View 1 (cartoon, one colour):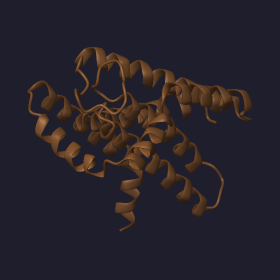
View 2 (view 1 turned 60 degrees about the vertical axis):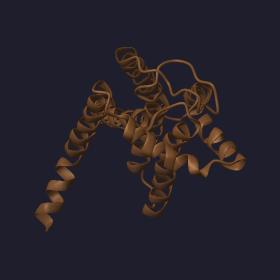
View 3 (view 1 turned 90 degrees about the vertical axis):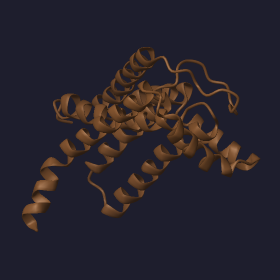
View 4 (view 1 turned 90 degrees about the horizontal axis):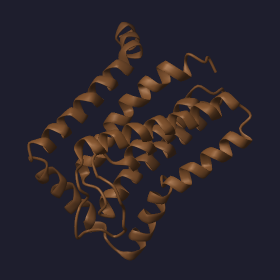
Length: 209
């Protein structure tokens, strides 16, 4: 039992990284072979059952929490007021690199956004979802920092649960608002998770914060 737990601790990042890449490749395969519509329609039809004015207002707010302006302003404030300038720099660098990766992938796949179901207007290509990628990279990085802070476990679990819920809701909001397909969101989460694991290994740990 102890040996199994030890192996899990040692290899969990490699396992998650591999699964993330495989999920992204599978979504990419479905997209390129025009076999993704059944998956997209099934998820959209489930989520849109929630449609009503209060839910629309709620998801618009949730989506705003990963908007360009919100992320930009919050990152600037962190860089100004954070006691750890290295942490602040790495948070900003994380977002910049993730954004570049997202835009690169969008221009590779050039997938159009959904038509006639939009509750808000968005520009640009659809695959993979920028909100999904940025939310997981941005808030996920905070989760990693919190996990390595000295604080009571109950607070770590509380903050981690709230962050994970927010990231999940951001992805759902993009489907509900009709600006992304479910495959965009899932692919965004997958590639962002793989990216974040690499980013933490190459930058965060190397700087020994």
